[in-house]
Length: 311
Image (cartoon, rainbow, N blue to C red; front, side):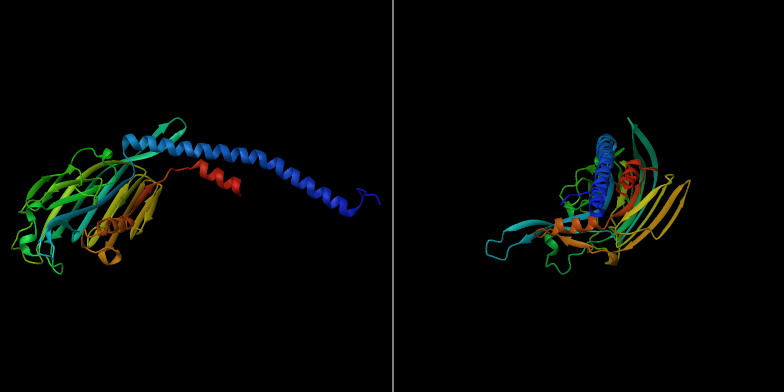
């Protein structure tokens, strides 16, 4: 029995082989282009990291957080004392900033960077240790501190001043704990909170933090009520994070957006102690609640090329 190319079954098999061969031939240059795009995309990310290393990386504002040390006494006969730390978040937090974008060119790549002055203000209630079984004489008010977390300290233009009640405090680099790191810290001292203040008394605070960053800015909603307003001339923003803005206006001349987040919207309480891994887990959860804006490049050619090749 002989096989003829005129046989319908044979012709079908030949057509399938021909189609498969053509598909393979066409796939080779497509694969080469995809490899080139992948290599260029990787290099673009490297360039972005290089610029961020000298200018300032993505910035995230955390806090402010007040820390008050206290003595914890053991229940046995030794009466051993251990100094622990209680953390407190503000009753209100208001953040306003205008992002001034720039494009930095390196070879064929473009990186979006920005500078901004974040004006923060709000108020703290006097820290309360109710329900924790801490005696008044064991609260170390003279060692109380306030800290503000900044994503990358290399982006700081200068060390800011913090206006606390009627005093002016100098914030210094170094959070003093793993809770707010990296960050800025200042000592409140024994008169940080008036000892005989009423339960509903608050201490106002304010500061202006001048910072540089690359691509993204995020804010952690630390206040019992947090309000944030951001403005920029960048026409192509991307809003992301745990909360989207309540209001936003977009146009060719830039954007403005406003957020409002309540403590009830968060998974983190207003106060906690560094018991076990509580410090790490609470701050980690708090950072997960961050929201903000990304200054997107106007055209991402590599992303568009990758999509075209896939389709």
